[in-house]
Amino acid sequence: MVIDSHQHFWYYEPVKHEWIDDDMSIIRRDFLPSDLKKVYDENDIDGCVAVQADQTLEETDFLIRLSEGSNFIKGIVGWVDLRSDEIEAYLEQYKSFEKLKGFRHVVQGEPDHNFLLRSNFLRGISALEKFNYTYDILVFPHQLGAVLEFVKHFPNQKFVIDHMAKPYIKDGFFNGWSVLMHEIAKCENVSCKISGMVTEADYKTWTSRQLEPYMDLVLNAFGTKRTMFGSDWPVCLVAGNYKQVKTLVTDFISELSQDEQDDIMGNNAIQFYNL
Image (cartoon, rainbow, N blue to C red; front, side):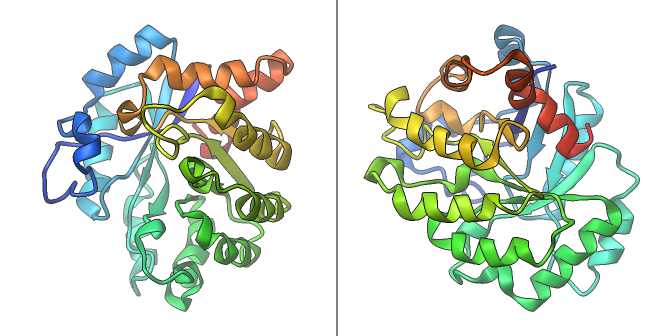
């Protein structure tokens, strides 16, 4: 089964989605399951994990509603305020929704580089394991030092790094990112999504050859059992179509065994998110 481990839905609202700048104007519209189903039928994708794009409980409820009418949405990564004193009550409230598999906070947007290490956030993360929820780590490379310390706090919590920690591919930044990614990968409860690359490179001039060192680093560090394919649709559309994004990964892993390819293209996501 081929699973896209990372994509989004939204009703476009200029204020809510102000992060979609003029260079990304192609995605200033609604993106819903009916749009994605057509894309998946054309690209032989069996299912997906829908990930939050807005930091509200309404966003989590929105994704739950969409999943109830779309069988191909196999799992949801929602948002809840992990800093809340009432975090366990929120998690208890959500546990009846089977497709809700975990949560994410947009840490990349936090001005504090050590946001992940705040005591109230750590307390919230500590509650996730009790409810068997995963946590998606969304950060920039300059936050990876905090990520390393953060994941060491929770050796039994299932973590996955989104978009390979968004390396600054356009600027050729590699070494500092790669050193920290290798260190983080030593924590065996941490996985990584090969996703979001084309939008960290130049939208118009990226090449597969330019992206291969980054994919190679992730594959070598995390291995074929802790690496998973994700498209980052519809954000990826600002730099390429879905087929290009999928082919980028399938071509890169084509020399691996069939079992290893199957793991990266679906089995690992199924196991990680308990789909």
